[in-house]
Image (cartoon, rainbow, N blue to C red; front, side, top):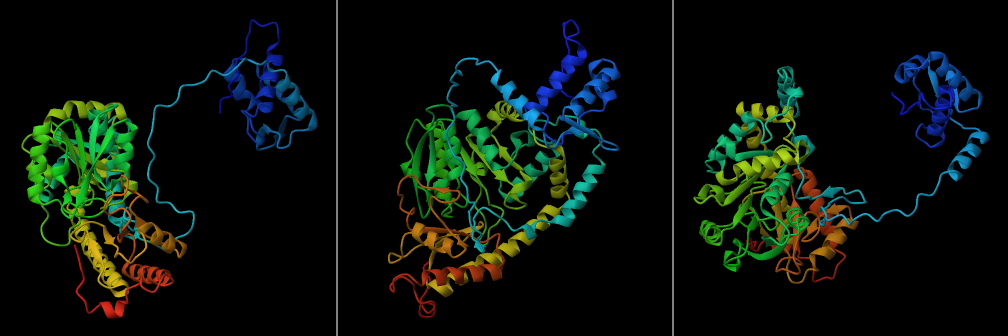
Length: 508
C-alpha cells in the first residue's frame, strides 16, 4: 500500500530526516498500527522519487530504535510491542501539539424518524414475525443457474452505468406481470426499479413531500412509511381503519397532497378495501388533487377468492403510484422492488432516482428479468402459494385448538393474520411480553414494524402473527408454547380449547 508521505526537496532538513520523522509520527499517531506491513524499500523509493539507499538508511534507524521489525520472506513491519522509549516519545509528541482553540459547533442534522426493529436481545424458538420468509423457500438451485448464465453473458455491463430507472428487460416483464396479476395496464417507462419498497416510498416522498406537506396514512399503519414521511417533515393525518379497510369518509376534503394506503391486505390488520371504497377513494383523490401510494406488499399470495383489481388498475386520472416488491416472494435480502408512477411523473421520477443512486445493480436485475421471462418465477409463486396456504390454515387450526373461537382478520391473503383479543384477555402488549419470556415472538400493534397513532380501536387488543418463516410443525409447537405461557394467567382468561371447538368460530 502507498503511505501518505510528502517530502520537501527545498527544505533545509535532509530527505532522510524528513522521511524518518514522518514514518515515526505515523507509527506514534496510530496511523500505522503494530503488525502493519510497510512497503519494501524499492517500492517506497519509487513512490517518493528518492534514492533507495535513503529509504534503507531510514528503515535501519527505525529498526534500531524499536519502531520496526524485519523478517526474511515476510518483510518489514511495525513492531508488535513498542518499547518504553517509543511510548515516551508518544507522550512528548502529544504534549507538543498546539491547542487550536475551541471547536466550532456544528449545525444540528435536520433529520427525524426512526426505523422499526424486530430484533430481540434473546433467542426466540418460534418467531411469528410478519415480515420474514423462510430461508428454505428461496429457489437456491435455479437462481444460481440463472445468475451464472447471466454472469457469463455480462459483456461490458459491469463497467457501464445502467438506466437509472432500471434495466429495460426487467421493467418490460414487470409491466407484463402486472397486467395479468393485478389488471394494471402500464408501459415499462412508468416503472422505476428500486432497492425494495422502502426506497420506492423514499422516491415518492422525494417527489411530493416537503416540510409541512399534509400526508394521510391509515391508522394503524406500517411504521416504515410513517417514519419516512416524518423524516421529510410532513404533517401526518391518521385515517381510521375498520373491517372494510381505510374509512374513506373520514378523509379531509382538501389540503392533502399524498395518501399512503395498503388496500389489498391492510397492514397490519389484513382487511381488504372493497370495490365501492376503492372507487370512492379514487374520486376523492381526483377532487382533492392528491396522489395515492398503493402499497401492494404481499398481493402475490391470496388464498380465498379472486383478487380485486388494484387501485392503479381502476385509476383513469393518473393519481395512483403503485408500490411493488420481490421481498415477500423471493426474500428481502435481494433488495429489489419497483414503483409504478403516472405518466405525468415519469420525468421527475427518473431524475429523482438518478440523483438518489443512479440505478440498481445490473446483475440482480438481469437475473430477475430472465427468471420471470422464463416462467420460473410463476412456478416459484405457485409453489410458495401452496406452502403458505398450508401454513396459513395450520396457524388458524392451532389457534382454534388452544384458544377456542378466535376472532381473526386478514384471512384472504398475505403472510400474517391479526388476532383480535376477547375482552377477558389482557392487553396485547402484556401477552406479547409473556410470550417473549417463553421464547415465542408475537407482535402487538406498535411493536415491530407496526405503528398506531395514539390508541386506535385495535391498538391494545390485537396481536399480529406471521406464518411465512415457520413450517407447520413449528407453528403448532409455537402456538402450544404460547398457550402454556398464558395458562398461568387468571382462570377466566384462557378458553378451553376442548370445550370451545364445538362452537362456531367468529371470523371477520
